[in-house]
Amino acid sequence: MARAHPPHPTVMRPSGTPCLVCVVVVAAAAGCRLVQRHGPVAPDLADARRLCNEGLSAADGDDLVRAEALLERAVKSCPADVDARRHYADVLWRRGQRLEAVGQVAAALELSPADPLLCVEAGRMYLELGLLNDAERLAGEAVRLAPRSADSWRLHGQVAMARGQFDAAVADFHRALAIAGDDHDLLADTARAYLALGRPRRVLATLALLDEGQGADGLPADLLALEARAQEALGRPAEAADAWRRAIAKGGAPADAAERLAALEAAGAPDALRR
Image (cartoon, rainbow, N blue to C red; front, side, top):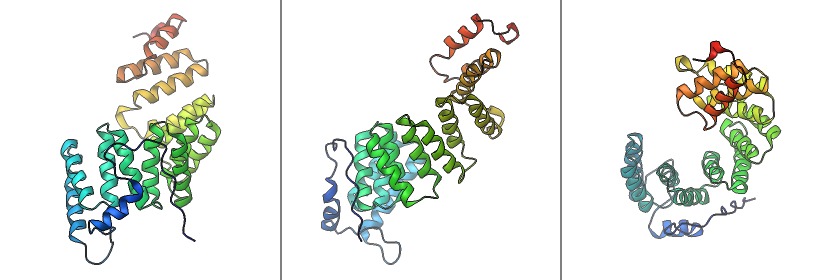
């Protein structure tokens, strides 16, 4: 039985973005075929692939303006090329053109609704925009399509976190960790979920796993802040003060870091820790 395409995201389509239901029609009118994995490649598709590769090279070199122009040409050359739209959406997103990026990723999903990686990429965009219903739908679809994908379960857990469903988030993150146990971003998400649940010992245990893989630089400022909050929750002011200091020294600490450190010192954190 053919599966219906997922509903469109609940955002306004940006001006200039092609109507999603017309993408395939436009592609056919332009003579463009969907990406073929085998056999001869149509000239317009070959041109789109060349432009796409040039755009990706520009993006790798942080020349996002040139990357955007090349990928826009790739999409115009072959509107039904899913990869061109996927990469174009990514560059638009990185340039801050978020509604335009959503329009491209939604068009890509129209063309390839059973692509779990695309579901994850789109779901992350919708999640960051606060479109939780769309993000949840795509996370569920990603898990259904790729139940052995750590990225699918991580997105599912991130949506649960955004909804305040912290127990569900921890369960999803652990499913992902069973697949990719050394993924640093996933471990960081798990530590944040444990902090939200008020389980500071599990926060510290998770951060210890992260710290082992961070090398000489140690944990970044945002995770040192998690350590500090966990130590505070455990009633360990000296350890908390030390973690706040390390977070501030790293740069990029939360806005309240200095205030929390000052409060700990005023409350009597040991003089030996005051450097």
